[in-house]
Image 1 (cartoon, rainbow over the protein chains, first blue to last red):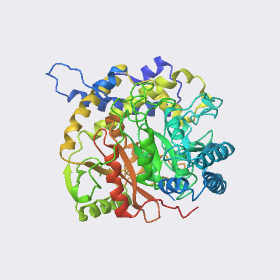
Image 2: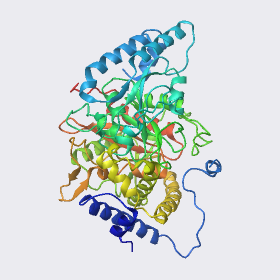
Image 3: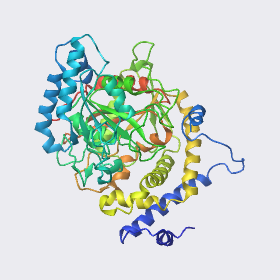
Image 4: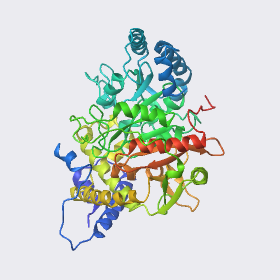
Length: 62
Length: 463
């Protein structure tokens, strides 16, 4: 579990209270919801390549 | 007068381009002091361009459907020789030496550039209350926000200062201001319009699109904009703008998807009423309503937020030491982005890919999906949150982007059109979403609603 305040300190994020606590709360909630969504993905199937955006041909130009 | 009408009048030499530009500049003189819609007005250059367009027409040379028509572009697009600030002091002195691809496409079709529009700083927010270039105001109520980030573009079009404007949309930045200002705003299919020469924000979420006063105007602009451009790494070789070829669409042919989840939670009553009324009218005109679940719509919002936080910070991180050059809200968002772990960003992109696959099957059942564009009416300038009737408080940015952000993640075309007004006379937007690449058909469907509701080329009474 990430300690957001410690991470913010270690990154030298120069935001003062109360914005700092609000910022950490927001990110904590957002990341927790995303991790929950990832946990709900089928986990027994092996990972596979999935398109992120666009078509196969699109990505060939990257 | 719409863009289509102006274009025809110029082509038939019923009005000159110079006259059109003079009318727009006169309107601008009258309304701009109240609205702060522009960062740079290029009046003299526009008149010179207009004179050239008139001379070309006199010689029988017609450049294309925008010949001689005044337009504006959000100040994130390069326009050769004109400052492109991004609404930020970071780029206050930046004068590009070439045009953005989208600007070039409009000029090639004959457009006359009247200026660069104001926006939420760095296109990263929804109020367009810009601490550096002024607070853009809503033409329907000067005490309210126009939405953002393309707020200046929307206000300029709604106030009839120009016939169309370009916007960018990373999490709703075309559709939110279109909804709040009573105009049409299209976020095209991802990869359909080149972003070359546009200031990036979220490089896998950014889209370029038109803001206009009618759906036909939006289609006209799209005909000029859509196409593959190898200078934008996400531009698609499949990009084509096709209007329906099998005759006019009617409501009787259409299956309209009505989501049963997510898009009706915490919505202001006036918005609900206007959207329901539009859906009822479509149904009475013969459309088939299909209730369905919008797959993982709530997850899409979180996916979009994670991706945007990380990408925007990666774009601007090198400038974060220049604290005095950032407004407070944008500064905090950019600092938040520094906290997103790399694995979380990549998980968000993986989830995105899976959700894009899941959404593909939806289009076997319906022709388009209908939602409110935003759950809220235009907020008062200075408000940062909204209190719902159940007592919960929601951040204004998150409320405004809730229904639009999912379609930046999915890359699907989505358009906001006016569908009614609140009792106090504020516009309400209806969002129509279509399958990948069906931008032309989506605008044709939106045109059916526009015609049925009689809501195009609106004139704000306050001006």
